[in-house]
Image 1 (tube, rainbow, N blue to C red):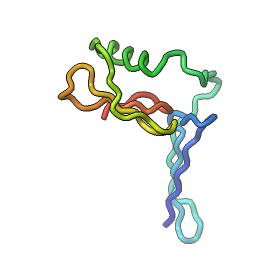
Image 2 (image 1 turned 180 degrees about the horizontal axis):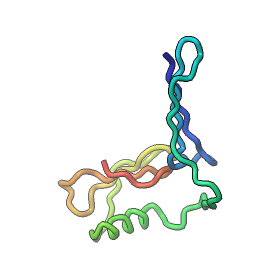
Image 3 (image 1 turned 90 degrees about the vertical axis):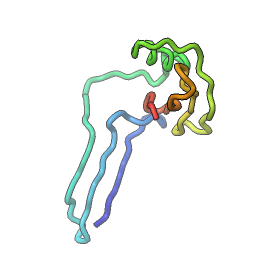
Length: 107
Protein backbone atom coordinates (compact mmCIF):
# COMPACT_ATOMS: atom_id res chain seq x y z
CA UNK A 1 0.00 0.00 0.00
CA UNK A 2 1.05 3.56 -0.60
CA UNK A 3 0.12 6.47 1.65
CA UNK A 4 -0.02 10.01 0.29
CA UNK A 5 -0.50 13.21 2.26
CA UNK A 6 -1.25 16.65 0.89
CA UNK A 7 -1.58 20.01 2.64
CA UNK A 8 -3.25 22.99 1.01
CA UNK A 9 -1.53 26.36 1.32
CA UNK A 10 -2.27 29.85 0.04
CA UNK A 11 0.78 32.07 -0.39
CA UNK A 12 2.70 29.77 1.96
CA UNK A 13 0.06 29.86 4.70
CA UNK A 14 -1.43 26.49 5.71
CA UNK A 15 -5.18 26.22 5.08
CA UNK A 16 -7.13 25.22 8.20
CA UNK A 17 -8.41 21.63 7.72
CA UNK A 18 -6.66 21.65 4.33
CA UNK A 19 -5.20 18.15 4.66
CA UNK A 20 -5.94 15.24 2.33
CA UNK A 21 -4.65 11.71 2.99
CA UNK A 22 -4.99 8.97 0.39
CA UNK A 23 -4.30 5.22 0.66
CA UNK A 24 -3.67 3.35 -2.62
CA UNK A 25 -3.15 -0.42 -3.01
CA UNK A 26 -0.56 -2.12 -5.26
CA UNK A 27 -3.05 -2.11 -8.18
CA UNK A 28 -3.43 1.67 -8.00
CA UNK A 29 -6.93 1.49 -6.50
CA UNK A 30 -7.83 4.16 -3.96
CA UNK A 31 -8.78 2.47 -0.69
CA UNK A 32 -9.34 5.46 1.54
CA UNK A 33 -9.45 9.26 1.35
CA UNK A 34 -9.48 11.46 4.44
CA UNK A 35 -9.92 15.17 4.11
CA UNK A 36 -10.83 18.26 6.05
CA UNK A 37 -13.91 20.27 5.30
CA UNK A 38 -14.52 23.07 2.83
CA UNK A 39 -16.46 26.20 3.73
CA UNK A 40 -17.35 28.02 0.53
CA UNK A 41 -18.06 31.69 0.07
CA UNK A 42 -15.67 32.86 2.79
CA UNK A 43 -13.29 35.78 2.48
CA UNK A 44 -10.08 35.57 4.48
CA UNK A 45 -7.42 38.22 4.93
CA UNK A 46 -3.90 36.87 4.53
CA UNK A 47 -2.35 39.76 6.45
CA UNK A 48 -2.70 39.52 10.23
CA UNK A 49 -4.62 42.22 12.08
CA UNK A 50 -2.70 41.45 15.32
CA UNK A 51 0.97 40.95 15.97
CA UNK A 52 2.06 37.56 17.25
CA UNK A 53 2.56 39.08 20.72
CA UNK A 54 -0.95 40.61 20.69
CA UNK A 55 -2.46 37.31 19.54
CA UNK A 56 -0.82 35.41 22.40
CA UNK A 57 -1.93 38.03 24.93
CA UNK A 58 -5.53 37.85 23.66
CA UNK A 59 -5.52 34.04 23.80
CA UNK A 60 -4.46 34.15 27.46
CA UNK A 61 -7.03 36.86 28.23
CA UNK A 62 -9.73 34.75 26.58
CA UNK A 63 -8.74 31.91 28.92
CA UNK A 64 -9.10 34.27 31.89
CA UNK A 65 -5.37 34.69 32.45
CA UNK A 66 -3.39 37.91 32.32
CA UNK A 67 0.07 37.45 30.89
CA UNK A 68 2.67 39.94 32.08
CA UNK A 69 5.08 39.32 29.22
CA UNK A 70 6.26 36.64 26.82
CA UNK A 71 9.95 35.70 26.81
CA UNK A 72 10.78 33.97 23.54
CA UNK A 73 13.10 30.97 23.96
CA UNK A 74 13.15 29.75 20.37
CA UNK A 75 12.68 31.97 17.34
CA UNK A 76 11.40 30.34 14.16
CA UNK A 77 13.78 30.33 11.22
CA UNK A 78 11.03 29.87 8.63
CA UNK A 79 7.30 30.57 8.43
CA UNK A 80 6.33 26.92 9.03
CA UNK A 81 8.26 26.53 12.29
CA UNK A 82 7.16 27.16 15.87
CA UNK A 83 8.27 29.95 18.15
CA UNK A 84 8.52 28.96 21.81
CA UNK A 85 7.83 31.21 24.76
CA UNK A 86 8.21 30.74 28.50
CA UNK A 87 4.75 30.37 29.98
CA UNK A 88 3.95 33.88 31.30
CA UNK A 89 1.71 32.57 34.08
CA UNK A 90 4.39 30.40 35.68
CA UNK A 91 7.77 29.43 34.25
CA UNK A 92 7.30 25.96 35.78
CA UNK A 93 4.38 25.34 33.40
CA UNK A 94 4.87 23.96 29.90
CA UNK A 95 6.18 26.26 27.16
CA UNK A 96 3.79 28.10 24.90
CA UNK A 97 4.39 27.27 21.24
CA UNK A 98 3.07 29.35 18.40
CA UNK A 99 2.92 28.29 14.77
CA UNK A 100 2.66 31.41 12.62
CA UNK A 101 0.92 29.58 9.77
CA UNK A 102 -1.90 27.86 11.61
CA UNK A 103 -2.47 29.70 14.87
CA UNK A 104 -1.41 29.08 18.41
CA UNK A 105 -0.73 25.72 19.94
CA UNK A 106 -0.06 24.77 23.53
CA UNK A 107 2.66 22.14 23.89
